[in-house]
Image (cartoon, rainbow, N blue to C red):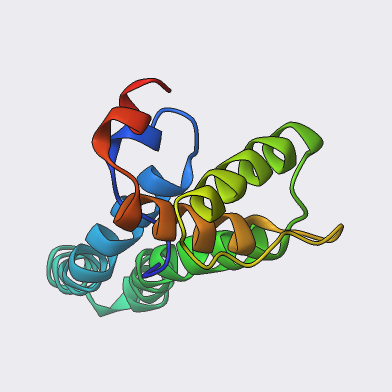
Length: 132
């Protein structure tokens, strides 16, 4: 979550921006919602419904974990050819400007692209990103 550049210029092309924002929000909000769910259902419906309210609370607590699992799966997923070519061009642009950038291998994944994107957003000027 810390490697992916959180900039709006690429948020329309990649779902990682939205998933990271939702995961960060759910880390804060879901434990509170889970606790409120258990307390309210137990107080309103009685202790007889405690197993159901605990199950709902566990569901709410699992939502941030689902975001982490998806991000981890996506990070290790291989890049499609179109993104591989685009990331190679970006990497070459960084090398032309004198930035040490690791080349992509044939088994490049989204984590490799995230590293190059982060480096590019730190080093390239904003005019490059306006053209996307």
